[in-house]
Image (cartoon, rainbow, N blue to C red):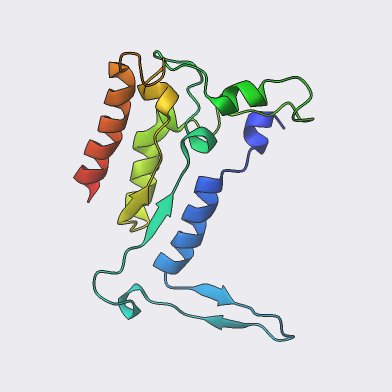
Length: 152
């Protein structure tokens, strides 16, 4: 099995939990001998309740130094020899940079109506606060926002 196939996505993990709530069944198993199944219906939540997920740019985006992105502190740190014995880094991560439309479709299919994401400042301001903005980086985040709005 390749490293890419072995990666377990924090984002997908949360979506799977949300899917259980959205499909009206979760297992409520506390520290006791007998575990009981408890049905949870979306309609049991108050009006205006937000079902959401969240991500962190470095942990999900990938797109390492693509389209004008510079190195972040984490990029430098994760590429330092010997820091991570597995050799892992966020170069690809969950590839949200290339697959954000699919990710938004998944969120919509699960009934997500709130999404908190972070911005990779090294993608938006590759030379720091004193340098010019990266229009491609800004377009990426605008595309995410526009598509989230389209999906409600």
